[in-house]
Amino acid sequence: MSVFIIRRLLQSLMVIVAMSLIVFFGVNVIGNPVDILINPEFDQEELERAIKALGLDLPLWQQYLVFVKNALQGDFGKSFVFGQSALKLIIQRVPATLELAFTALIMSIIIGIPLGLFAGLKPDSSVSKAIMGGSILGFSLPTFWVGIMMIMIFAVMLGVLPSTGRGQSLTIMGLEISFLTWDGLKHLLMPAINLALLKISLVIRLTRAGTREVVLQDYVKFARAKGLSTRRVILVHVLKNILIPVVTVIGLELGNLIAFSVVTETVFAWPGMGKLIIDSIQMLDRPIIVAYLMIIVFMFVTINLVVDILYSVLDPRVRLQDVKA
Image (tube, rainbow, N blue to C red; front, side, top):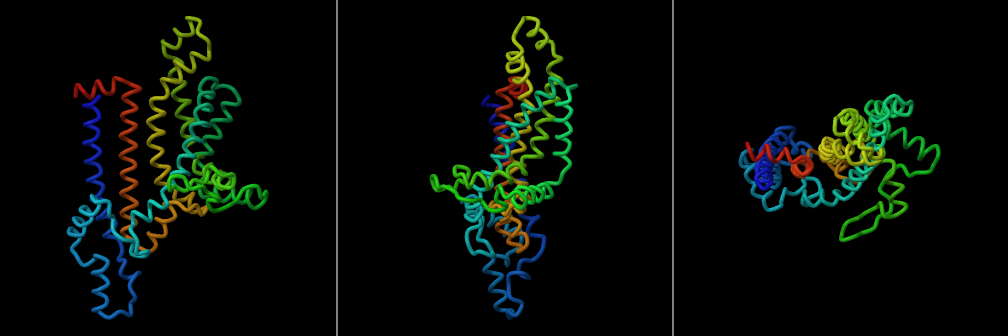
């Protein structure tokens, strides 16, 4: 197990280094923030002073070295627009995004796995066909359109749920949490469902495919021949074996939920990282863009590492093959 973890840690470190190069140079070769942030009426001396204050006077490779040096100390630079630490501004928005992403993930697990299991065990029933038809809709409907329709129906026409914002929140250990209040929970419900819709469809189809494959295996037939109850066969022999690919995909999808919650946060005016990055892109606020992308990269790498370790726990063949390699 230790060999497996060390190899994955080294691979993760290489990915982070490579992505830092891609992110930094990719962001810095697009556009010129000077054209947006600096008054065009400035004379040449004032213009050069402003450029130096923004750290844009150095060659690009030197800017990267300065960025790496500061990033290792937890400093991703100051926002061009807000004049505050980019990392601090993002961290202030992280709880809202994580709350939305984890709620959507939990919804996809609670709803997707049982529905997919049922559809896999009884594929010819009308309910199973309806479940699979619904999953196709979940894949097909655009997230922004579903969000707007939800606002129209539940906020405007029925008036049962709020349309925007995060609602009332509680501060616990310095973090604002909204799902612990009734008002916050009502604000969270629509954006979480909107974000989870695609993932629910994915989990349903993945679970169904795994179930259809597993129920035909000899060990399941043998378990039934031994006279084990249907519940035990499903929970112990079927569900346990289909969880390996499901855990892998769900872990990776958590990163996607965090990174691509931008549309949902924009539609519902949810005060998370997604809305901040959209505003920063419009203003070419490079420190915030780079800091956001590096945080997302770090999250993806960390989640992948955890998923790999969990995968090896669920399937010992993975770590045994790695040790032999």
